[in-house]
Length: 117
Image (cartoon, rainbow, N blue to C red; front, side, top):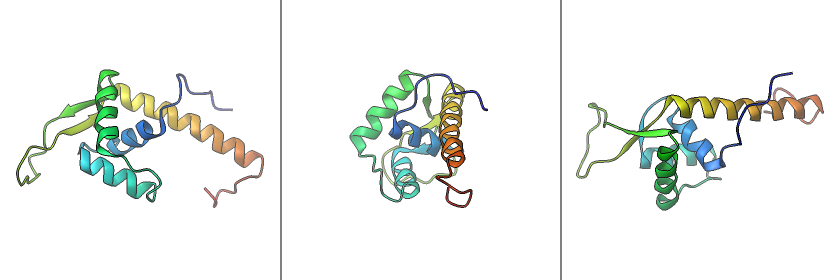
């Protein structure tokens, strides 16, 4: 049995934001689009929710504002880019393990087959 992850579960929209940032830095609109696509529209991060969450997540050391990639072309304004921190990645991994344990328990109860999830 895998040891239960430490800490309390992430809020669902915080989980999705961290997951969006897990492999690259993104600006707010890119985060909103990725989350919406991944959840097939089930989760929509409105700007107020997204930027309020990013502010709170930065205060907790989960994300940090980063520089705009040199390869990005901007037409007016300066989008704010965010990246996951080392602490944020650890918290995300802990939550993924916690969720994985739940899926494993569901499979053990024959609620899911490997091909269902």
